[in-house]
Image (tube, rainbow, N blue to C red):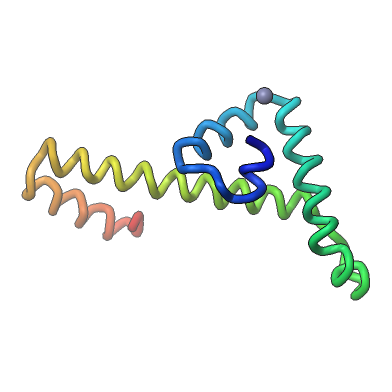
Length: 106
Ligand SMILES: [Zn+2]
């Protein structure tokens, strides 16, 4: 699963499981950091080191994880909105959308 995460080929559901697992499982987190490190070094070593820039590999990994959490969040929001629409009908949905827009959630 680590490799498929690094390839960006996990489904949203898999991504959700993976991100949560990584937060609780140090050995998978280590595997992720190692795999990520190797890829980033191979991808970016030449230009970055050549230009004297330092490599903040763990920052880059956190960025990927943040992006994954954002994708999961958006997917969850869509499902919540769909459920809200089904449960409460158009009037409530309009109120909910107005609330979300006012609070910049969308
Ligand atoms: Zn694990």
